[in-house]
Length: 134
Image (cartoon, rainbow, N blue to C red):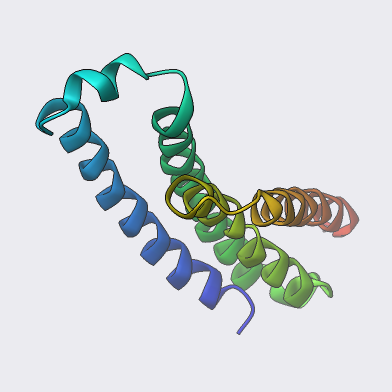
């Protein structure tokens, strides 16, 4: 089922990162040390947390879109399965950012995810260029 999993996982990931946005709102507006959080707006964990939130939702949306396109044009896209897996692997980027923020892990997942998502988007673009139209 090329594309179906991208859509399902994309929506689930988007839901997670939307909920994570509520945590960021709490930290900015209601947490006991909110002034420290606000003062670190463009540095450190605050900046990284916002990067994870934005990229998580962007990559989730890309998976939904890619999944739909793969389902819709599956017969004309011989590399649909590979593109699907690369797009799903791209979700490692925002997960990697969170793992850096909360667990201090190195940025390997960020790089793997960024490369995978970029490759899936470029590959899909070239695949669509090769489709013959009537």
